[in-house]
Amino acid sequence: MLRRFFSYYKPYKKLFTITFISAIFVALLELAFPIIVNQVVDRLLPQGEISIIILACLALFVIYIFNSGAHYIVTYWGHILGINIETDMRRELFAHVQNLSYSYHDNNKTGHLLSNLTNDLFEIGEVAHHGPEDVFTAIMTLFGSFGVMLYINWQLAVITFIVVPLLTWIVVYCNRKMSGAMRLMFQRMANFNARVEDTLGGIRLVQAFANEKHEQKLFKEDNENFREAKIRSYKIMGVNNSLSYMMMRIMTLFVLLTGAYFMLQNQLSIGDFMAFILLTNIFFRPIEKINAIIESYPKGYAGFKRYLAIMDTEPEIQDRPEAEDVQGLKGNIQYKDVTFGYDAERPVLENIHLDIEQGETIAFVGPSGAGKTTLCSLLPRFYDVLDGDITIDGHSIKDITLTSLREQIGVVQQDVFMFSGTLRDNIRYGNLDASDEEVMEAARLAELEDFIQDQPDGLDTVVGERGVKLSGGQKQRLSIARMFLKNPPILILDEATSALDTETEAAIQRALEKLSVGRTTLVIAHRLTTIKHADRIVVITKEGIAEEGNHKELLAQGGHYSRLYNAQQTLI
Ligand code: ADP
Ligand code: MG
Image (tube, rainbow, N blue to C red; front, side, top):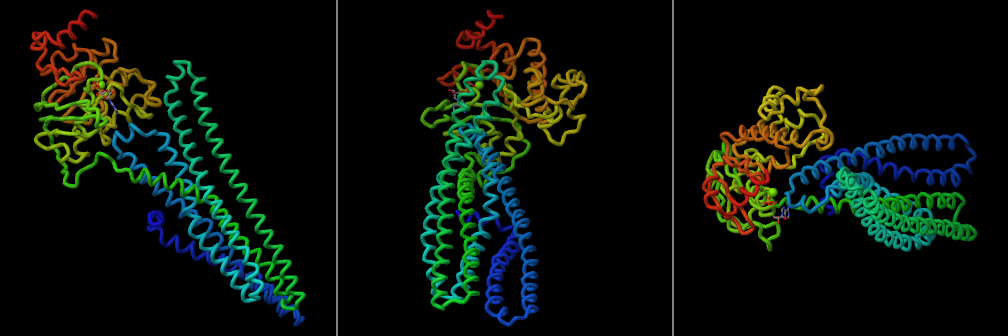
């Protein structure tokens, strides 16, 4: 894990080296003061020459100027290092999460991912900056001051250091406790974020059901849990701080006592005694620093662990090494003995055979939950078949790169997703390079032109979060316009007209018919009138494919289809 952490420093070797060297400077130059005091008191003062003392102070002054420069580098450049690493990790995480398959996103909350992208990575950045150099300089100062103490009076130095193992033990013990508490806190923070994201994302539903109180109760629970975890970690932090404070003061007392004793025995000069007191103070600083690292380290550690957990999740669906970029697909599709289930134990589709010809419009009908959407979502490999295979123009879809496969399949869903942005942004999602003329042409084909022209801002009209400012029919036509721009040879229309009133339905029906010309089209329809003219109709029930044929043939058969059709006719 440490190795992986350090691999992120690789692009910043220079920056790291400079801040590292500066940090060593800062640490070592700190030792100059007690040494010079020692010399002034024991050697220079007895000479009675003020000029030599002025010289010593001047030397110290120069050292301090140097050191303040080094301080600047450590603080500013060191943080740049942390920020760069954080930015790199965030970019990688975002890219990785985007590649994770539908099945991952089905089972994981967006809010959790959001926490990882923001909070966790911030903490990691902090540790990335402070971690190595602080640990190193703290150790340097520790050994440096101990070295000087040994040099001045080794007996006293050894006695002083007796307290160190105890101190270290307390610090290590607290670290472990802190780490656990922090992990819990972050987990609860992620839960809390997920809750907010979920509730505010569904705020219209919440208000429509007047369930604000209920949501507040759920929120309160998460909020309280978060509070509890946070309090716990601060409690441990408090114990940690007070214990280490106590240890350090005990040490000062200890040095005062033993130093005085050594002086009374004439084994220690005044200058040595002063230097010793000063050194113990310097010596505390790294211990305090290590303590501070110990406070920030568990946060970074817990965050990095969560980060790795996501980064190490392989996308279930990815290109085979031998997958090829296949362009110009015509759209001859074959389902060969396809079996699939979201859960391997409970197959939704079993041994499905289908032969779809280039340019054909094939409609799927049947009861809700029979697996129509599932059947279609196997084609762009949103999910992979458990058994059997699907081919397009003779290529198994697993041998085609995901990008080229999905570029050539257009999916229009009932529940159209809009990004907050303008009409232009949303239509152009079908082809990011399209010009305004092409966008308007697509809008015209999708029967959306009048609507856009009626808007004072035209294509610049903002659609609101998830397109709340548009009606269902407008969103639907917008998604059809997107598809005209994308212009794929294969089209999947999943209940694209089922949520609409009859007038818009007619407009959308016209747009869809235009759209499917010259393309292999898979339609899932709820209203059977919309698919009467399909080349072929396939009835899917929970048992699999029940009937197959065109409208007339199926009516004549007098099976599922004719019963469904007649039932819908009487409704109208
Ligand atoms: P249809 O489109 O015919 O109404 P679906 O293909 O949406 O049916 O669903 C078929 C079955 O698969 C249903 O029992 C449904 O609950 C289940 N299902 C659909 N999507 C998922 C999913 N993402 N994860 C698990 N089960 C799912
Ligand atoms: Mg469906």
